Image 1 (cartoon, rainbow, N blue to C red):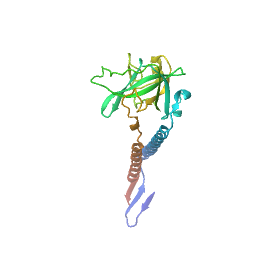
Image 2: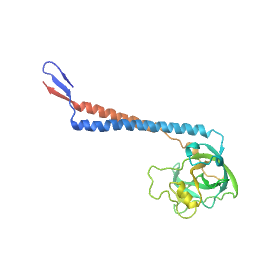
Image 3: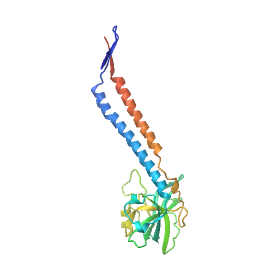
Length: 249
């Protein structure tokens, strides 16, 4: 592609180097794909927030009537759970922040009435205390059959899981960094459903519960998408700019 001006003015031609073509062929589509991936992530977060808002307003359903390993059927849905707390075998979910304070979430197995398994009730947040070697006190729970209400949610997840983070420590309460239903079930000696129930904020026998503040932010992903698209535009600009060569005729 070239343009010749009269009177000995320069000839302009688009002759990018092979190296520039190869680099552009890699980075430009990569930036575009990453931009659309971030937009997809933003849409997913928007959908999850809408699902949470809609389902959280529905009437509670009895968990024992819909015992299932598929969390998608129950995610964010209010449930009524009837069973007996296994107070002697509780778990402390480590590295949980509330404000700027470190602490634990208290996960207590509730053995479901009429079922051969349990569900972990997340009873809320406790501060860490003066030392990690001294675990916080957990107040006793009433014996016998109890009924609790809460929202079904996934277990706490992390971006990078260290080896052994899903294995509970010895002793009770056991500390765990990443809950895994199978490993918790092995420790307890009975099956555990692969999700937790966030105890209702008005329910008794719980600790600090700020479940309502946990929302996904699609705006952050939209900002990342814009950055990737800008990178793509810059890559195209510099590719064209450095590919144009002039020759004095």
